Image (cartoon, rainbow, N blue to C red):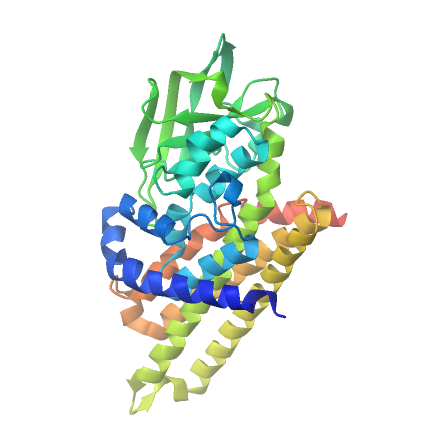
Length: 383
């Protein structure tokens, strides 16, 4: 049986599609102007059972695996949502897995369960003003002082950093290099922790993004995720999932952009004939389809392999890198061609393709820039 089309997953796809069409699509333009999603959407998505997909019932989820999570992502985007919605509504997908992996019951009760219930919004703080992909050399420092750590430093480009109730934060507790990094959960309202400023972006307008600053922030030792100086490995364990998640957003956005282009090409007439009757347009659509389908197949295969083997397996890591870079190439090409087919209408903010065109650009930057991932792939391949 096709893993992606079991009766349960067909039902999940239908449910998410209906939710998107009712709760998201009619409001998305306003949320883009507002620069954030309303908290009510998190509560509604949790009530519908979507926030907890991919998380076990033991930690407050509804079960399922990363294929189920992928179906949620695909369905939202292909029903008229956006990758910006995914980034904001499902930020817990990068904020709490490290806490789940570490297995601390207190942290799970205080942060994971409320996040999956839509009651708290979490974010992940890794990137700093002085560096992004070089995670091993972060400079935000946490110094032990009795039952607390004193944190000083800054983070930037933090998704859901404005609305977030807590930030799973990478800090340096030890020596230079990857071996000196820990993860601390820092809660909003802690003295010295400030959202320095919300950031305005090219795309993902409905997903709030912030700079965060920490000045002598006292964080309880009880908020340490896992072992002290063991944070880098907790982060590493999620790199494959994060990259596959972005690849999913890439090919799902490409598919939606292709669908929009096909519909417009059939409806729009030029010189008395539909655009789709022009050979140059049909050839564009075929090439858009080819790249989208290739990205989908490569990404789905990588995702299925990640379920069979460890996410630290070099083969799984390599497949995730290739999937993300393939999806990036596809979505950047497809959204550009789709906008070209839409012509002047595609350049208008009222058109949906305008949103996808802007949103797609971040996929090749977030989760490891394309160039960084290509270099890592070269090392894994022995080149």
